[in-house]
Image (cartoon, rainbow, N blue to C red; front, top):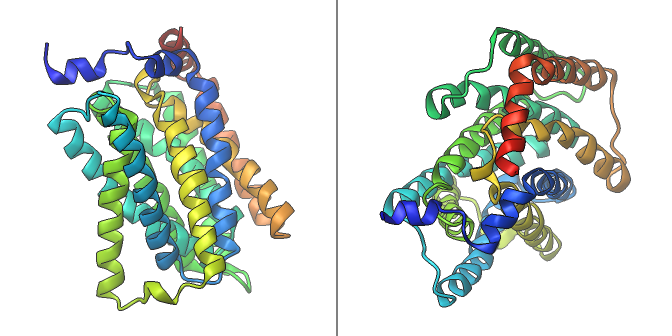
Amino acid sequence: MSSSAIVASPTSPADVFGARFPFQLVALGIVFYATGPVLARSSDTTGVLLSFWRLWFGVGAFSLALLAHRLSGRTVGSARGIKLAMLAGAVFSVNQVAFFTAVKRTSVVDVSLLGTLAPIIVAFLAVPLFGERPGARFRWWSLVGIAGAVYIVLGSSSGPDGDLLGMLLGLLATTAFACFFVISKLAREQVPVVSFLTFVMGTAALCVSGYVLALGFEPSSVETPDLWRALGMALIPGALGHIAMTWPLRHLPANVPPLFRLATPAVAGMFAWIFLGEGFTLVHVIGGAIIIAGLSGAILSQAGRDLVADARKAAA
């Protein structure tokens, strides 16, 4: 039996748990993810430096986890899986820089609403990579969601406090995260979740560090309160969020976990309202309603129901 087959065999207690509770784990991951924008928005440093420290704190945490994983006698994974994890890390570095910069230039609500486009992007990528072929109605409703995102970009950037570059960076962050998710699902057939996330964080940290050095940023200029925020981002959305989201990927169709991200604007908006005093504008309400309508239509189509049924079979 090949090493990849050994890794892919869901016989460990962790894999059994992931197969039994995939939806609950993904939902928990969304809650953890939603804390990231609030922590980033409340900081005083640049998004790039915040990402730098968040990633290196994550490298430290996952390195310790990987050491414990290896000391228990478990495998790191196949060479192909590690390469995929490193590719995912490079893509994730783009997401990190774009995301944190967008949050600093716009708002938690703007970036979170744009993040709801990720299921649409994943749906298109899942056709050639996983053979998941949603029907025409799924795709048409997806276009409605795209129209809602375009409305948010144009509407938010046209106001007195709008920032077009920030909104475009939000779109870039969403696209990068969708690609990261697809690569993650491919890699999880080859590597355990701890190994995968360790190589992801290490590669992303190196890529962001190169960007920081090239632009002449000073990591030492970040003050202690923001270092604590970066540590919080590394541990809550960075560690707990990624573990909860990545853990059950082998047991779910590619189209299903991103659909759970529809709850991100609501959860992040609630956190932002509680901790930052941010609120919704009419642009957010209308654009968000269009996005939710489009994605809800896609989910409720026959193709969407088939995907959900397949996910439940995988979790059984």
